[in-house]
Image (tube, rainbow, N blue to C red; front, side, top):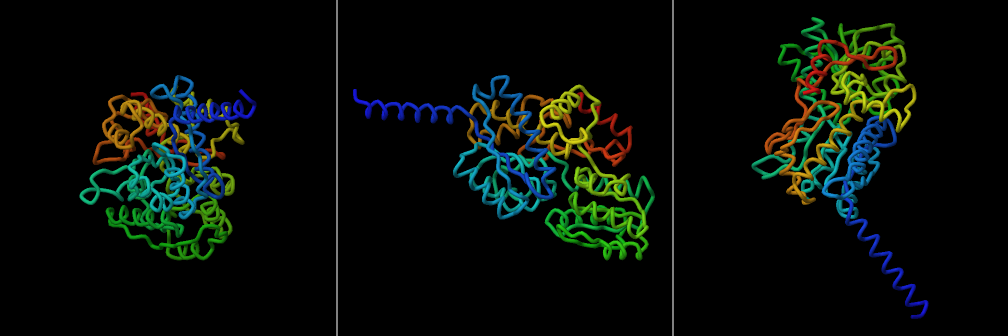
Length: 400
């Protein structure tokens, strides 16, 4: 046998081994914004997923195969999200996906998973309509799932805090111009209307705006007793800092994104006391949460010992375990079978946010219910429980 033939045989053997390795893994897409203003959410989610996948692989994987994460940065841009999703489906041949941090990206891109009959778990995006794009009778089956608290839940809790707990009736809404901000603003207005309250001011701003003076002055002149927000960290910090410049301080209560590290850091002392709904607060009050926090801090060593977006990390972690359980129950990686397993999970998932017991049905793809969500507040550069009784109840629910 000459050297040329030996080389060909060696090359073929190598190609075969690589192909076998690829076939032996279970490819899961993980997309989110790993750069830019939304990156604390995207990176934290991705790292939570990585932790869970690593733990699962260390125990032998799923169906005797290792999980392989195929990660893509969607940059929080709708068009990039579409491109990434198509690449994960058509080039990488993922069997399921997780991610979608930004509601707009989700609404633009998740239809490709639906068309390909590949399940996708939105583990951060909260727009109320995210799981409602593909419902009967137009669509027999829905391939879009969620493990985050939707904005209908969050808006109700925000309004409860302001109207019922604080007895404030004059509120202003400041929301960014994205799908996330405007859909959230609509949910807030609906929740207020249910209490017969109309906001005294409703103001809008754009991503990367650095001066909220005009919007805040309108709210102040209208007599607002509280500012309700729907936006992400950098712009939320501009609202808090803008109130300081005006010498005007009223409660700032908004969606879960007020817990983002780039709000807390950029607002500094001006962000103290801001309140928001949370599925997870970085407090080691159960063995599961303690182990998760310690593992995250050891693996990624974030500044100040604070997870950039604890909610995103926890929901990412839990979504990986839910998906792995569904693949195991399905017995294969067929998208239809995985969807059916997600809708009828027969094992409890011991998650960080909660214990998931039949989290989905065919007609309900929301894993998080209102009783799993607590109010957090910024204190000394961290998010802590705003109402300790709520946290105690959340702790007990997570242990069940």
